[in-house]
Image 1 (cartoon, each protein chain N blue to C red):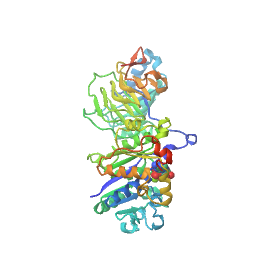
Image 2 (cartoon, rainbow over the protein chains, first blue to last red):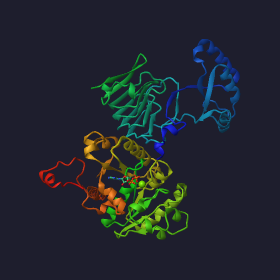
Image 3 (cartoon, rainbow over the protein chains, first blue to last red):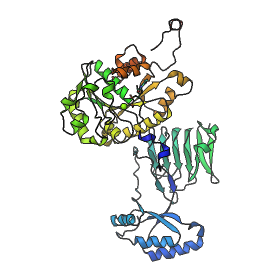
Length: 244
Length: 272
Ligand SMILES: Nc1ncnc2c1ncn2[C@@H]1O[C@H](COP(=O)(O)OP(=O)(O)O)[C@@H](O)[C@H]1O
Ligand SMILES: [Mg+2]
């Protein structure tokens, strides 16, 4: 069966993942202005410019054609590695591809509705570095989140009324609340909100992450497994506290 | 209008074909006009379990490709009046199935039958998705082991999104859990997941529980669906399952280790 391919014979496997990623939100398409600003930044925070991967967001620009190649060159000259472009017109998308960059659709503004999930395997997504917005526009999901499903609240909290099964992934800009067993992956504060937390009725999580600080199942104190817990950051350390 | 039921699981070798044959037979024995379709193109074995492999002339792919009519491909079961089998092809490759072709066949069958039972191939790809796409109900076959439960969970996710009902925003596919190859002694030992754990994870209604049974092996070797074996535990468990599918309330059996009574110890009885 396709799911049971002999691991030893595989050259690679695809893994879902959430990587922290810096988004460079362009408000000017002029490579010269970008260069000036970058040069200033570089002298202030040299540590940041270590071939840091960035996503160039052009959503705020209104130009159908961009000097994408020159903008990329300017970035590289300042030790920023553009890996993808977000938003823009079709010609922008085509030239991103021509330059070997990925392209992401513009960040959609999700309507505040209860919606059921799509079913793609957890895919690699890019998290924004924007400052945490006030908690709003959260989402309530009713029912079990099953293996291969991903449910996210790109703004605000995510509430799951049900369990999150192994192989499933739930994520939120704010906190993640699971009124059931958490057996899959839970990521809170995906845009960097350090005050976000994860709450669940029964802890068996494959992965817990708050603002990019994570613990895998094997890092979790076995005493806490099966317990009702709260997961928070304190001093950039992920701490799990039993609620019972 | 027939009800379309897909028997599916994600994982292979868990008892889908056995269950599709047994359920279809049980429905026909209850007087329902039933057809069971093998969607496992390339690995057909429903015809073996149904004992009609020597009567296969045309198959599903022939019908889809217009090489034979549906009536030429349908095989009438030898034992039960109301039962027909639509076999899969052994030789064609899986891509021979098209969505439009499947839709046309189901549309025609739905006029003449009460139940259409679709035996799904393993996996979560095209073949399995085609088998489930038009379903009204799904029987998710699960063995009491972690990998099988995980695969069933994945399939339940697909049923909620990759079916005609889901895409059209209709009432969702009715999901039933069928636990097969359940061995209470091994469950008690902790070698296998128990009923409650499986139900808790999958969180859908339990349609039936089929014990691990010699009778299944015997039945498949003889090409007689195990539902006909009324004396066997598996046969009775499938009969119960069919009753529940028809909306009857039937208590669960075979999920606990037999407490051997004095009589059975004396006569060495018990379940076969
Ligand atoms: N309840 C059962 N007890 C014992 N063996 C079983 C049982 N159900 C299925 N099997 C055996 O398991 C194997 C796989 O069954 P099958 O129905 O072909 O599975 P699938 O269609 O899911 O691949 C067969 O050898 C079958 O006889
Ligand atoms: Mg099979």
